[in-house]
Every structure is written in structure tokens, then in C-alpha cells.
Amino acid sequence: LGRTDDAEMNRGLCDKDGGILINNAVFSYDGSEKVLDGVDIVVDKGKMAALVGESGGGKSTIVKLLLGFYSLDRGNIGVLGKQMSEYTPEQLRENIAYVPQDAYLFTTSIKENIRYGRLGASDEEVVEAARRAYAHDFIMSFPNGYDTMVGERGESLSGGQRQRIAIARAFIRNAPILLLDEATSALDSESEQLVQKGIEDLMGGRTTLVVAHRLSTIEKADMIYVIENGKICEKGKHAELVERGGVYGRLAALSGR
Image 1: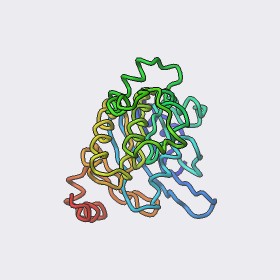
Image 2: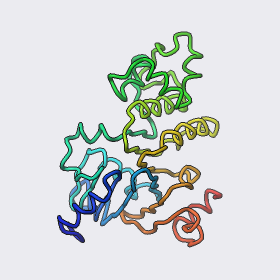
Image 3: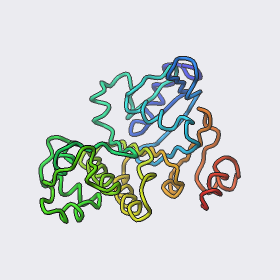
Image 4: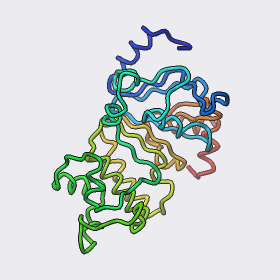
């Protein structure tokens, strides 16, 4: 376990019963080159933490680990007071809503694409989720409304429209943990503003971990972790990290923040 024994780790997980605790995480895809090397991250219940850094630094790998796609080589991940090994993949994902950069839409109706977040949801719940995601108006502009069929991977919709459907899907899931992986990075500024409104509403009361290139999306984070070459090189709030003038300060200067 690296820097903690089992008893200490389990106490820590209980302390974070509404959040996420990543302890001394070591991971490689090929068994040799470390993508994560001793990463520690804490996201308290109902708080927002952000991961920033250059591409390839390990940010999206952390999201994949939290979704249960891979297991750590060493270290521990605690989610909602339990170690990840105590969950089945289905149990884990029931507690997590995930909005990626390019959400996958199925070749079916908009209504069913939103309902994919929770298959037993009623039509009324689908509409309410769409309203909260700022998607209802554009959906109702189509002749068939919520019964409008979307093309393969949602190609008949704009990027901003697809993302708002993904956010509606996350609303209807109503999970305690929210993972956002570059959720606005591929959008134009007008679409980003609408999507960002939906995301800010979605984050309310949820334990949220955000991966972002655009610093505008994470300035309000309760904690920012800067990842470089698989390690946390800086952590803190936006203002203190800018003042410190390190890696994050350079990123902020480049983005005009």
C-alpha cells in the first residue's frame, strides 16, 4: 500500500464517505512505463476538484480508473466510503454520472438517449432533466420533439446539442459523484456558455471531479491538482496557484486568466 497500511486506509475511506479518496496511486498500461506515480487526490463530499496539466500527464487515466475500466498497480481508491474492490462494476457506475468530451449517442430517439442515464425514468423525468440541462428548447424546435431520431453517434445534432443531451442523461442518473472529462473543450464559445450553465447546475451538491484544459471551467474549484508526468506537482485554489507562479501560473498566463 505504499505510505499507508490497511487500517489507516480504511479509516480514511470512512472519513470520505461522501467523496473520493485516491491514495498513492501507481498505474501503467503496459506494466513498465508509469502513467501515474504516487498520486494522492481528495475530493470531499459535495465539493469540486479539478485536474489540469499537459496532455498525456495522466488526467483522463484517473477518470478511467474511477469508472472501473482499469485497476491500480499499487495504492487505493475509495469511493463513498468503500474501497473500489468492494463494488461490482455495476454498483460503482450506479453511483457515478459521467460526461465526456464527446458523449456517445445511440441511433434512437432523443428521449431514449436521455433515458439511457436511468432506464426506468418516466417521460416527465426525461423532460425535467432536459430542462435542467438547457436542452428542452432546442429539442422542442424539432418537428418530432423528444421522439426525434438522431443519426449514428448523434451526427444530426451539433456538438453543443449532443453535450446538453449528455448532461440531461447525467441529471436523470442523479448519482452522488460527477466526473467531467473535457466536457466543454470541443465547443464554440456560444455552445460552451449553454453547456457550462447546465454543468454548473448539475454539480450542485454532488462530489465532482473535473478534467479541463480551459481554466475558465475550473476557477471556482475547491481544490485544483496540477499533474505533470504522472505526479501531482502543485495543488491549491486558483488564486493561490496563480500567485505561486509555477506550472499552473504559466497555464493561466497562456489562457489569459
